[in-house]
Length: 200
Length: 200
Length: 200
Image 1 (cartoon, one colour):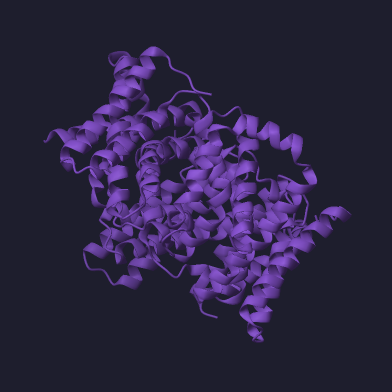
Image 2: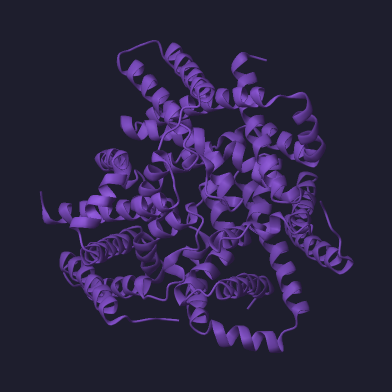
């Protein structure tokens, strides 16, 4: 399995796992757990593709991820318990930061590929990175955390998307632009987390 | 009027009626009553068609249903009172189970027709069957009931969708597959309701 | 700058401004302020275009509006304070009524242009006029105000959309139909506001 595939699976699993936790904290049943996890993992990319009118959707092309989340939902309770014991919060933040970087950069590249103007492309990147969590919180009847917790989560994605756009404009090798921007988002997210940076 | 037309109208009316009740319980005005009823009746199928990129939408092709709900909204208050007097809760559950069966099977068939892989097609069936109610609850600022009430509502739809997919794969007559699967969902929903089956 | 451009900018700014206020009342950070303002300003037209499968979206074609809201979000706090001092509530209602008229009539015209049946076209007009606010309230975890405050906001839009449709059917000059209907919605909204008209 290639590196990008591993990161992709990790990003989706982290999204699904945060959905499991929020759904269970709302006393949802297994149906709710699956649907909330699915929305968290794929909601951002799906909204982007609907706005850009791109089909097929990612999870339609990769049915295996939907099936994986389905089976994980059936064991969500022991899964959450076990993971909480063997996985530190630190690792979850790291995996989530990786997911944010990868999803956001994939989103801005998709926006550019669909001939969006630059600012709109950067918005597509941020939407892909954060709207899974926004939709999760809406379904769970909460004000979306990313809109109010004062942590520069979306701003890290935004900065990395512009780094990608600038590199792309000046003709940097596309693969290098993609990977370095994702890495930049990842590092910036971890740095602001460690430093406890707050925005207003 | 053919049998399928009658069931279709019943399913839509049951959806609209559940929208009337929830909107009124939130003290919405006539605009809210119409919009919530409309979303409940058509939200699931509309979301499916947006995800599959299918147009025209059902309610665009059948303007008469939107107009019907519009006029019913104007008399929602006396309508709710009257129906509560002359219609037992039992009949509403029966009609709703009929709607669940019909909507879900229509959804999985649409997914298959759009060349979705099997698991995704089954998800399209469940989305069509339950997301009207999910969107109704989101607009009414509630955690969607179907995600947390512990009743195997979505699971009945899911089981029936797979029954349809299996019959379709082994070459059963399409019409028979359609009707028997809808009937199966209907019967399974009623049975689990009577028995008080709960999931976690 | 032409008159229609000025009104368009005003309508979008009024939408964004109402988003600023609601986001700040929920203690959102700058990311939340931008996203809620953006959804309020463009949500209605975006939902209409997704339902009608029209691309590119308005804000994709006019990137400058998204950028404008982005920079205004950065100064939302002093902006809200300043505007509250120098702009009376009356002017905000007037600008909002102008926006309602313009957005709704643009929506019904888009529906007609996409060959929708008449009632559906009128719904597209109302969706364009009011769903920005509906989505704003959903993201902010409130029951949408337009569905429950008993003011005939959506009904003014609905009446004006039908005025447009009737004029269009009898062959009135399209531009005249457009402007007089928008003016009608604007006037009707102000009149019902002044008179304090309530619906149930």
